[in-house]
Length: 377
Image (cartoon, rainbow, N blue to C red; front, side, top):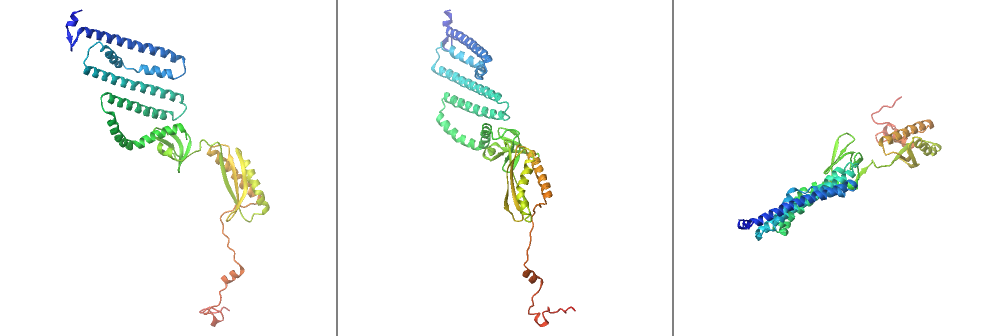
């Protein structure tokens, strides 16, 4: 085998190249075998447990690329070679870049599997998909940003100056996409705070409807008229939202007015009549009923009750039964509903002055008759 030392390749004897090749092949075989062994053990463990952590470990190991093992084996195999400092530096930088990229792949896979497991556990939640997509997007953006910065540092680029430059560019980019990022983070806020779910009836300012879709950037609402309303998630996060779906019961206040000519005895009985009408409607809880005030044209009674259902149609059915009962009872008792009227009262002297014209200067010479008129006989 001495003849191998007599032949040289790139300044290295063939014997060293043979040793390097052998070390490389053995290292590659050991790394691949180790991967299969560890992955198989964790896979068996994952099949016997309910936790998602071992599944993430198995998936992360399986995401290791073959080229990573090849580069690692070549780096180990280069140890027997007496390479120049420049060649060693190039080899180390290539190996470091491959390691950084593989770490990025591991982190991305672990994040993806973790988010997928969380989404599966919250499959009954309608907007879990949007929240999971948002978390995965932000997480991968952070991971690859770190990998990119470390890769540049490994290549010898001054990071501080680059970060300063990226800071200025980042500010400009952030200003350009601030609405998109605002909607993205708002979607995460909506998911975790849960001010509403799919199917909830909400009111935002003067717009109302049922939530039909919650996305990463916007939320879609189907209005009562049938048209689709689209709200940016950032706008919803800053708005005051009324959610009627989560209402356990509905509080109702209504007023009834009767005329001032209603006798005192009947006025005294009206609150009891109103209570009987409310309690007889069913599915309600009576709160109070009072003679509230003297209105401009009516005696005003106020009634407060609760409908034991958040459904609006149920409320309208109850209110209709109450109104019909009150109307029939008032007709039977001879009580008249008040409506806007205006009554004018004239004093006798005022009425006489309005009807009888007083004598003036032009009537004095004609016995009180207006000038130009002939007395009637």
